Length: 339
Image (cartoon, rainbow, N blue to C red):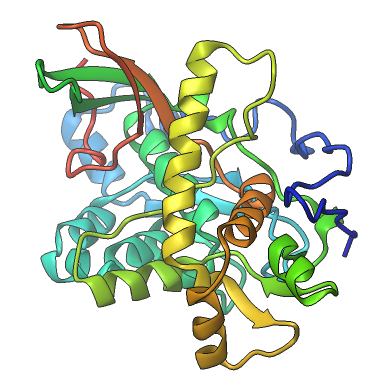
């Protein structure tokens, strides 16, 4: 893997920051507009309604709901694939039944079943092994090609003196343009990260090996906490000079969400400490980590985790309070917008 030069006093990477890796497929990749199959070929001159219905019910599901190319943020680098392109299609009746199954929803398995129904992965690949950034992206992508790129969501104003609930509309194609693509230059998991504080404390370089979180991590967290599944997305690049106030607020909220999720799951992210991979030892070490060292791990993952930035800036129409939230995935997520 490419080496990282880390300032042991600040924990910051001192190498010039590389540009965010771009998709080789161009700016129109992963368009989230509604996908519609072409069935004009089944029509014949003078065809009656009865004949049209009879012909339509004989059409294969693959032709009625066509498959299309989708490029994952990970580019397939962490799955042993030659690229990150998979085939995806919009939801049909089977997918809707999966989402309506309460038992699957409570266990978090509904997302995995949805992916199995709407995605074609290389043979033998289980969607629970997808990076969390890929999973979040796919959820929005499937929603977009099923019900369209315009997504309505309701949000409560955080202003204590207001608390108004308002409805907002977001263009999912803007989300597709926030993708952070995987960078082959960082090498393969586990990624070696030098911890600045403990390195100074022991008088020699001290490092940990880290990995990206995956779907089975989210399912495990859900099972242990017995709460609704929380999906962790990769926010965009760190705040830099020249960003607008809108971008700065969006980035701050996104960074905080990622920081919280990474801190809670550091023992899953770190898979060895100076080559020691015993889980109990790792948990003991994580519980004693200095804030400088956890910040170093979080910053590295923030810069390199493939995924999307699903935070949006919102203005309350009642009191004009501006705030930033993660684009919600609610029970109405897989329903068409009213507009």
